[in-house]
Length: 356
Image: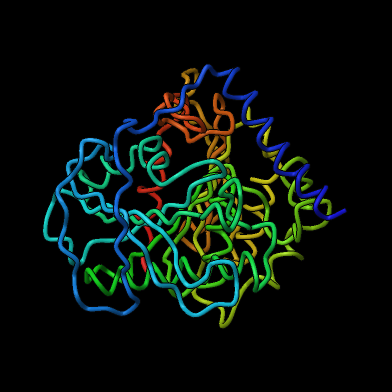
C-alpha cells in the first residue's frame, strides 16, 4: 500500500509539472550532447588542502567566476546517502573569497544544480555582491525524482539529508575561510522545505533561510501526508507542529524569508501563511502591516514583516503573477518564471540584514 501511495505522490508531481510546462510553454535547457560528464573530485570533510580550480567550461551556468562539480564525503551514515553527496560550487570572479558569505542553494524535484543556477541567475548576483554558492545535489539512487525528503523528517531520510547539507556548508566555510557568521540556506519547492528543516536542525550554523514555494513543516511524515500538505497545508495548528523539529538549544533567532506565487497550483499558498506562523512563533515575532509593492506591474507582490523589536525576523512575500516557479528568473528553464520580483535579489537583501 505504501508503495502505491508513494507512486501516486511522485506521479502526481510529474503530471502537474508537465501540465504547468505546457501551459507556460517552458523549454528545458540542456548541456551540449557531446559534452562528456565532468569528472567529480572527492572532497573530504575538514581537509585544509584547497583543490586546484579548473578552467571554466562553456557549458557552465552563466557567471564570470569558477564552477566546479565535486563530491563531499559526508559523516558516516547507515542511510542511502552512503557517505557521499554530489554538489556544485560557484566562486565569484571577485577574488580572494576569504571572509565572503556562503549561500547554500537547494533545488526542487526534477532539477539539478545546473538548472537551479541557470534559472535563478544566482551566479551573476554572486559576482556582483561577492558571495560563494554551494548547490548540493540529491541523488537519483536516493530519490528517483531528485526530491529532497522533507516529507520524511526522520533519521533515515530527511534528517540525514539535513545533517549532510549542514556538514557540507561547515566544510566549505572552513576550506575557503569564509565568514562563518554569514552562512545562509535557500531552496525552491522540495528544496525550500528541506532548507527549513536544515535551519531548524542546525540553527547555530545558519544566520537565515529563504523558502520559495515550500510546504509547511511538521505535518508530513510520508508520501501520503507530503502530498496532502502540498495541496491543502496542515489541517492542525502549525505552531504545534514546529516545536518537535526545533533541535537543541534555542538560538537567538531563526530569520526566514518566505516567497510564494499566488498562481501556484502545485503547492497551496496556505503553506506560506502557516510557515510564517511557525517561524514567527519561534522568533517571538509579531506581524506588521501588509504593503503592496510594484503595484500594477507583472512584478507586483504583497509583503508582510514579522518583527521582534526592530528586527525583521520573518518576511512573507506573496507574488501576484507567479506560479510554482522561481520568481523573476530565466523563463527558458522549467520551474523558473520571468514574472514577479527577482527572488534572488529579495533573498540577498533579506540575508544581508542578518548574521549570527
